[in-house]
Length: 77
Image (cartoon, rainbow, N blue to C red):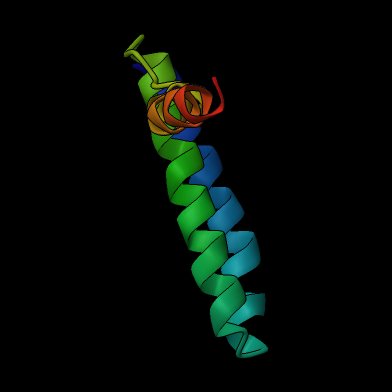
């Protein structure tokens, strides 16, 4: 429980330090990217703290490219 509170607290501190400068300079795209990456990072960190299985991005690439690879190999052989 304390790990999750610490992760969320760290995310809030980072937000408090960074967001006012982004808003002041009217950097809307940077704010969107910052928010997206922070939410993903905090979410994955909380999932790791709860010992939830985190999917590997390489598995998605293998799922997508295996049929393509097999089709190309069947054409070439």
